[in-house]
Length: 58
Image (tube, rainbow, N blue to C red; front, side, top):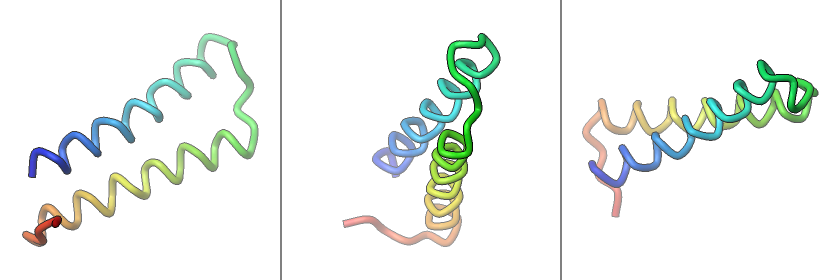
């Protein structure tokens, strides 16, 4: 499970970094960047579903 937690943290780091960059005016929230955020959150959702269902990762 610790591997999954690490994966979740990585995905969330990407999300937070992008949102902070939008907030700080470093980058614009383009459709591509927003898609990246949505993709990262989808991966978090998958990992959380796997954890809650008790699936094991090889």
